[in-house]
Image (spheres, helix red, strand yellow):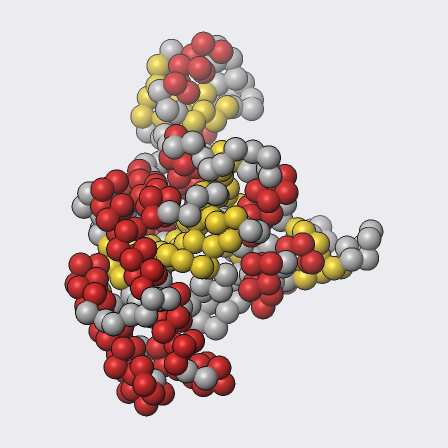
Amino acid sequence: MSSFDDTPAHDMRGDALLPSGFADLLPGEAEAEARGIACVMEAFSRHGYQRVRPPMLEFENALLNGAGSALQNQTFRLMDPNSHRMMALRPDMTTQIARIAQIRLQDAPRPLRLSYSGSCIVVGTPGRETDRQVSQAGIELIGPDSAIADAEVVALGAQALDELGIEDVSFDLSMPALALGIIDKAIPAKDRAALLHALDRKDAGAVAELGGSIADVLLTLLRAAGPADRALEILRGLDLSDAVRPHFERLVEAISALRARRPGIRLTVDPVEFRGWQYHTGLCVTVFAAGSREELGRGGRYLAGKEPACGLTLRPQALLRAAPLPPSRPRCYVPLDISAEALSGLHSQGFATVSALTQDASVAEEAQHLSCTHFWRDGATHAL
């Protein structure tokens, strides 16, 4: 018996262990993910969004500059053995797209429409420690700062999810600047963290205790969370300052523009949603679907350098868990001497072909052994 055969099975499994938060995608899973990403990216491309591909690694001072500074705690770092400078693995692709727009495409005409897909590596956050390698597919609309631009990004996300067959999708809108503007004028800086934490947990009792002179206003914001029409009706009753009111008006405009572009879209509003919006400056959106407990995507308005921008990032792994399973491609086992014309015909019919490697193979038996659904004999396919 060879030394390989003497290796205990449990040792081999130990060598194959992956770090927490990383996983192999096996046949079927990897194919489904690739098809899903291709479907989403095709939807973006049809609407004029041009694909770019930023690198997985960048120098730390570039990747975590500007808006990227909000991602410091989510970022893996390592030393470049050539330059001895610190590099960082991207935890998110949005800031990379902003860099490309600001530097590489600074002379391109605006509005600039870009799309992207790829993997990101993040340090596990509390409650999501297993999400360390995540796939992203998204769009960025750079240049205009308008409700119509906001609506285009969200509506195109809805179109992509439609094409994946995901049903009962809802878009939860928030405007962090609205609540933060109210708080900044009334609550001392040293007391804001506790109040924001209470709002984040939707703890009405703590908000009433910590809110001081604006407690009633903040409690109204808490109550407003829900279907968009109801939320807007409640928010209209607030006496908002001249500095804060434009944020509410922009929310109203965006909802109106979204409904004009995509009638029937399901919208909710949460006026006190702050989580994950570290570098966003305006309307934000989180995507959900009935039957799925995880976010399908999120995005919003931010600054790409000094330019206004709005984007949406979808999570292909989450999308595929929410989407109906795609039909498996039928597999046809074919002999070595099959003609190129017959092979091309099988491919045009949607078959994946698995070729024999010897002339004397038993076609039907080998087809079954290799998990094929059909085999080719006498000029025709035969189902197993």
